[in-house]
Length: 176
Image (tube, rainbow, N blue to C red; front, side, top):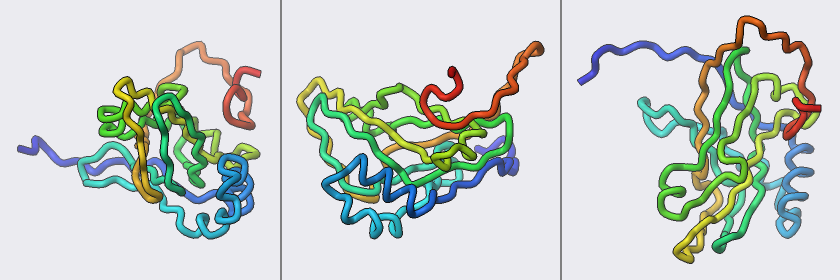
């Protein structure tokens, strides 16, 4: 039973990063597939919700991966998110992958701030995943498989907030 139906606010959009940025970042992360980077750029799918009731936008793998227990992979998604101020994009592994394989983000939850979009790296969203299986399960995922989900949420600030700096970069760029 639906109590009421309300139009959801449209607060963001996903875009591909530039071809040059993707080729560079992908080739660094997957040197064994560097020759395919140009072709893979064309196949990048923008994140999408699976159903109208889904909160999360699924992100898709640009290349197939296999992770044995304890192995880690850094995934350049080729995606950036432009969003309204006072919104944040939180990233989580797809629920089923965590449940079946204990697939986890190395930073537990990805936090993409609204000002990351304008960084020198074009706001390129990466994911670093580890297979933390305690049952010796290997995770094999095909290119194009949804592997993480992003949820946009509003956030508040304190009454005495005095942040005025501008971001330029990813990890650690706001604490320099």
